Length: 115
Image (cartoon, rainbow, N blue to C red; front, side):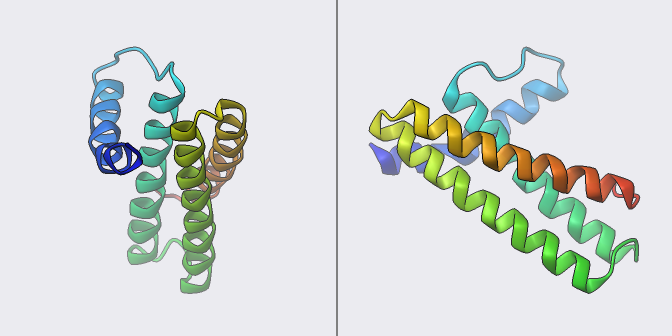
């Protein structure tokens, strides 16, 4: 079951990101929130690459942002595993921490001109 969820996560991310672009309802369930957070993680990675290429952040800053983004992905993976095992409280806690980190990274990148 866990493998199925992990394999479907990228598909869910694309679905939710597409829904958000169309102005549809935001994520409501735990699994939807986790999938949306994976999409945010991908957006942070892309914005970091774009910002570095455009010279808006230094290589050292990009390295740090990517390290923190990778750490947040570890938390998202843990949230997914906890959700699959039925530990919704633990999953929510990991998700909250990951989303907080990703939100801070997005704010940092936005402050440095990332789009």
